[in-house]
Image 1 (spheres, chains in turn cyan, blue):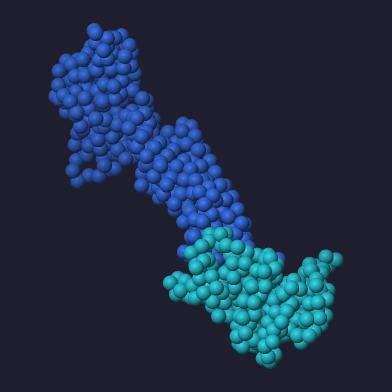
Image 2 (image 1 turned 120 degrees about the vertical axis):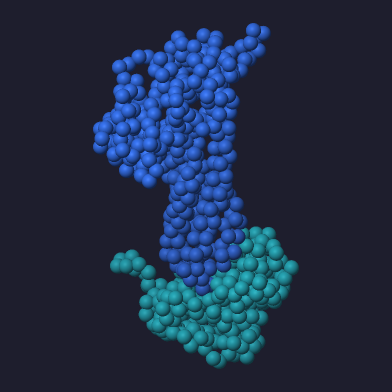
Amino acid sequence: MSDSPLPSRPAITVRQLDKSFGEGDARIDVLKRVDFSACEGEMMFLVGPSGCGKTTLLSIIAGTLAGDAGEIDVLGQSLPRLTRAEVTAFRARHVGFVFQQFNLIPTLTVQENVAVPLLIQGAPMRTALARAQESLARVGIPEKAREYPGRLSGGQQQRVAIARALVHEPRVIICDEPTASLDRENGQRVMALLRDVARDPRRCVVVVTHDPRTYPFADRMSEMEDGRILRVLQTPAEIGAAHTEKL
Amino acid sequence: MIRLALKMLFGDRGKYLLLVSGLTFSTLLMTQFPSVFCGLMTWTYANMFNSRAHLWVMDPKAEQSLDSKPLRDTDVNRVRSVAGVAWAAPYFQGTLQARMPDGNFKLVTLVGLDASTLAGAPALLLQGSLDELRLPNTIITDEFGLDRFSEGQQNPDGSPRRIGIGDIIEINDREARIVGVAKTRRSFTGGPFVFTTYDRAVLYAPQQRKMLTFILAAGEPGLTDEEVCRRIAAETGLRALTEEEFRWSTIWWYVRNTGIPFAIGSIVLIGAIVGMLIAAQTFHAFVLENLRNFAALKAMGASNGRLTAMLAVQSLTTGLIGYGIGAGVASVVLRFFVRLGKVGVYTPWQLPVAVLGVVILISGFSAILGIIRVTRTEPAIVFR
């Protein structure tokens, strides 16, 4: 469990967020008046049973999905007020992603995969590859640069994904079930790595998970159920209790 | 990103090869068959190519170069008397049977030329002399004629015998001694060309009331061919065409009146459709397989414009590579055809350009399907 000082400046603030899918009888309210916040220098967990809406909330925070109503401020920017193109540009500049299935492009080398966010921003290939190499060194696998993702273990692939999420120095890192495809040992390593990433006082890491073994890495934890935030666990003791309870 | 797009494409080797194969096959069909069609069409006006006459005068109802609607011999003088005509010469053309030394018969295209000027004689003589045509019972044939006449010929010892200069064949029971070998373009009817004088040709050919097939002519300097044709037509009532007009009249006659364009066109259409189906289907499968990757790129901030550019580059690159290989293979196959000499082959510069255009259209169509799919994909699917 983290022993870092509690953060203060909010990086993400969500107020009264609603989101539904479908129309008429088929309409499903996935998020109901959700309030949520995550601060700089914080590793915020979003937990809950499958179908409770945590991935939808994460998608909206990441700017990959629009909410129906409510306020979403990320790094002081109100996402609903931005155009689609502006949201895309905002994501490119400020948001890093770690996906459950890694989503590494199998035909690109590890180094090229890591360089992708910089290339999206228009960086020259040479610069992007050099910074990708630095990012790989940061996650401890610089020697894998020329390999293809398919030749790496699951843990190594997730490290590559983390290197990719960090390469353009985003201030918000969105992690969707980062340990779901990993064994316990690799899961712990990846979470430790993300914990280190979150130690940057200007960075906020939001992790969606239903793996209780990762709870000790959280600074705070929001529990969701049926489209609502049930409670926010603020202290290591509360999180520890939740960890024990789930295990 | 373009480099990454190409790596994504080349990395999926199976689909990449299938895409390239489809477009290669399509390019091959779309290049090869029209080239054969164009080659066949050049055979339809082989007599014009061999004769190099500027103006062709014919019966008003004649439409194409093999159309035999004979004129009266006196029509030559009528044409000569038209103001602005520098010269006019009779030209006989007919398809006849020639009897070989071994008694076998071969089909030939007999051409009779004005004996005094030999106007309309082939430009290049490989063996012999054109002047010897003025000797009694002489003919000039072409290389194809020698090949055709030599088929089945044997020396007394049983070895194959090659017909050549000095050999005698019979046309309509009359002796015809070969005195020259010309380089000619092949005739559409398949028989070799046999050139002789007009007077002798009408003796060789079965007698009809009128024997003159065409009148070759040229205008006076300072007059356009079109103007001279107009004057000939006005004063004689005959049809007079420039070589180019007659060539196109002949080609269009074959296009309108034979099944060749339909047969070739349907193969070309099948080639284009098969290419389009394979390319579109495979590229779509490639896009579907990479949809999560594209969605991940979108999530990471890649705009629809950038993804569109990536897909366009991928599709266009495949198209160009497929086209390049297809055009190369077509060129090898067509060279082989030319060497065989069995099929006419002509690839006008417009054909490869048109095929490239079709391949780009096919690639563009495939890309558009992929682009629609990718741009409509929500980046949020990567979280599912």
